[in-house]
Each structure stands twice: as structure tokens, then as C-alpha cells.
Image (cartoon, rainbow, N blue to C red; front, top):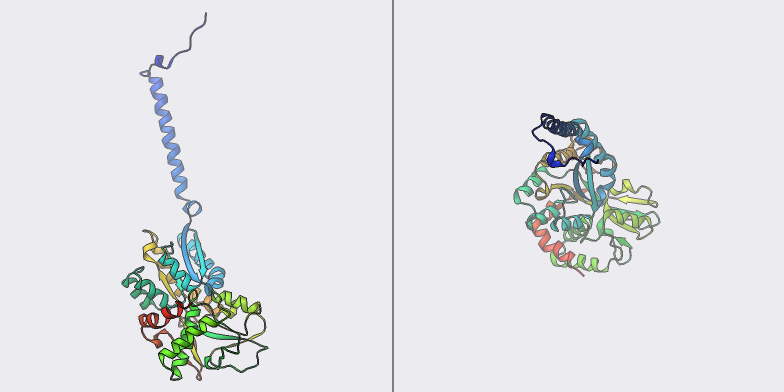
Amino acid sequence: MTIPPRSESSIDKTDPIYRISNLLFLVFIIALFSLVIWFSKDQPDILKPRTLTVYAFSAMEPVLEQRIIPAFQDFWQESYHERVEFITTFAGSGVITHQIMAQLPVEVALLSSELDAWRLQAGGIISYDEYEVLQKRGPFCRTPLALFIRDTFQTPISSLDDLDFKTMDISIPDPLTSGVGQLAYLALYQSSIRRGISHEVSLDAIIKLRRSLRHQPTTSRSAMEEFRAGLGQISLNYAAVDHSHSDVVPKKKVIPKVAYLAEPTILPVKRNIKPGQEYLVNAFVDFLYGEVAQTALKNYGFSPLGSDLSPGFAVPTEMSIITLDSLGSLGKINRLIIDKLVSTN
């Protein structure tokens, strides 16, 4: 005779053994879940490293990637027992500015000059308060513009006034994409003004130059790479890029007697910084002004700001310095010069 299997409905749920079994199973599940949480909370740096999204103008790539970012990661790990991973993008400062305007998730931007930050404030991307903080903080390093001249080029050059764009093969980065390109054209414009030439004629000259120039690389780094490849007799660029391109064909580096000084600046993009991320962003900004980063910048050809390292770019007695402030308000520079220059076809 076959005994049918016991059905679910035949289980006596009032049976103490059944109730105790269920209770023990529930206790086991809760205990297991608690253990998972307990062991996970002690390992946040392994499971979930912090991330920081940084966009920087191209000349910053070697020193950031090779020295400053690794040093900050070590500092953060030692101080807070957390790993920090960087999401970095390196491009021309003009490109970075457009990317921020296009609402890419940039948390910290290293711009080649305050000119790009002013555009972001004028465009409503950052508030006036954010822009004021940037102005008070000031640049985090400096570098003069320099002329890189091939050894085979024999004509003596000591200033921008010595450049003859009709007979010399000169490379200047594109001012639409490159911060150093904008500064280079502003330096040429100011050189013309200093010779007593009117604003209209000086502006027309740099606009025509941009239309006719053969070599207009997109960034300061690509400009040196093209120079290395044999393009152009003279390259107008940041003096600091020479450190990362010391293997470029034999050349002379000439800082003009009237030198244009680039002053890169740091912009935390507040609209992209999530709650709880502010202290990491602020720590990285402060780190760039600190001794470790300033020493790295000095070792990579930039002039640091720390008084215990260097007062900044030392001006030789025979040299005078031009900065953006020398040309008037940033709004005026953009409206009367840059906007007209970059709209040139």
C-alpha cells in the first residue's frame, strides 16, 4: 500500500518545532546580512575609491600625470585612508572652456589664463561669487611666452618686433582652441601698440596673420610635437613646454625683451560638484598651491609662487613684463580683440 506524500497543508504551523525552525532561519539571515555590512564598512577604499574629474590645458599634462596627481593620491591615502582616482582630460584651454559650457562633468579646470574663466562667468556658467574667489586666489604658477628657434636659423631675434611673418616660417597655436594661441596674438597686438600703431591697424594685422599663417596647431604640446617633426623655423609657445620636449631638434629658446607672462588659474566648477565632494575638490586646489606641487611645477619648467621656493618668474633687468592686466579689462580684451580674432575665417 502506497502512502501519499504529506502535503503543505498538512504541516502544522502551530507546531513549536516548525516555529523555532523559522525563527532560527530568520536569525541566520539577519546575522549574515549584518556580517556583510560590518566587513564592508572597513574597506571603502577598496570597494569604492573616490573620483575627481580634472580638465587641464595641455602643457600641464606631464607635471600633473607624473608628479602632482600621484603625490596627491599618496597624501589622501595617508591622511584619510581612501584611494582617489582621477579622470583627466588634457586639451587646449579654449576647448576646455567650450566643454564646460557644454556641461561636461568637469569638477576642477586648470585654465591657461583668467581670460577663459571670465568667459565662463560672462556666459552664466559660473557665478560672480565663484569668479571673485578665483580672482582673490590668483594664479597657481607662471610661465613667459618664448620663441623656439632652430639652430639652423641665422637671423638674430630678441623680440617679437624682429619677427617677419612674410619671410619667416612661424608657428602659433590656434587661438580658437589654445590658450597660448590667444596669449601669443595678444602679445603681438601689444607689441604693435607699443610701437605707436593704432588699435584698428594692430587688430587688423593679427587678424590677417591668423588667416595667412601656415602652422596653427591646436595646443601648446602639439605645437612642440610639430616643431620636433620639422615644421616651421620658429615656434611661439610657453617657455615651460621646453622641459617636456628637451629632445626636440637643436634649438634656441629666446624670451623676448618685452615678455608676455602667462598666469594659469584653477577653477572649481561648483555646479558639477556633488554634495560631500567639496572637501576633496578644495583639498586638491589647496594642494596645487602647496610646497609639494609648487616644487613639481618648478622642476617641470613653470615658475612657482611659494616664497620659500621662488618669488615667481624673475625679471632680468633688461626685460619688461606684460600680463593680461596690461591690456585693460578682460571684458574689453574679449570684446575688442579675442572675439574678432577667433571669428576670423
